[in-house]
Amino acid sequence: MIIAVASGFSTPAIASVPTAGSPAAPGAPERHSVSDLYADTGIHTVASVAVPGYQMFYPSDIVTYDERLPVVTFGNGSYATYEQYEELLRHLASWGFVVVVADSSVTGDGTEILAAARYILAQNDNPESVFHDRIDITRVAAVGHSQGSGGAINASTDSDGLITSTAVLDLPDPWWATRPVDAVDVTRLTSPVFYLTGAEDPVSTAVPQAAYYAASPVPAARARLLGVGHNWPTDGGGFRGYLTAWLRFTLTDDTDAARAFVGPAPELLSDPLWDGTAIKGW
Image (tube, rainbow, N blue to C red):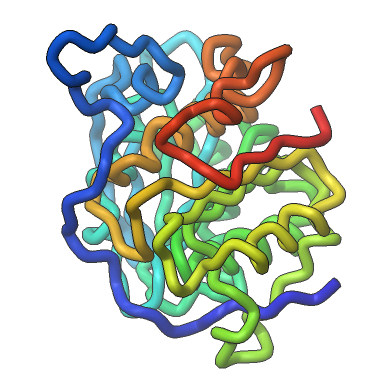
């Protein structure tokens, strides 16, 4: 099954959207959900470094931390740069990920996203790098928004197993394609995938998104955030909690994060802030 994705759409804009971690109304019981937990900042302070072509965000205690850290490679949407996602990328780093983003706003074919992952993994073998012997090279996720979401899928399917988890935000419907190289084939996925979109997104609509999920032969989840369109705040807004939980679940075997996706009553399936939810393959 070949499904094409867009190579051109507007950049993320700052907007007011429902956030999973918002305070409860007066008199309402306080929520202690997986989404709330992972929408909060993680335990690590965050450092960053730039080299030609790439920007990295990572825990500032990486040299002394007693575990090797998984990698998240991120794909920008069309016409966007990493600054439009920086708060979200820093948030992910605070939860113990080394995050790398290519300096590109044309990421639909996945080559830039996959090259960024390979770049940071190569630093694991570089004695002069802060990442030397600090990377878990067996745990790598591809994440992206809009055009970058198609790129994340292409990076995964073209990675020969290097990418072990994928999460896509607002994957465009097939008819938004403008370049043949941006076509994705979700039937080629070999590792878990999470499809997230806004319920009011005119670019990522319900029926095509359900088709992506149905065609995926791997463990998968899907969900639509109510009241949200194609653009959202730089910190990830209401997407942040479950996205972070997915990465913790699939890259670190975090049992708290797993409660959102597996077990007798996965939280995602009953969260009132989301619709179109589904989980399979676990």
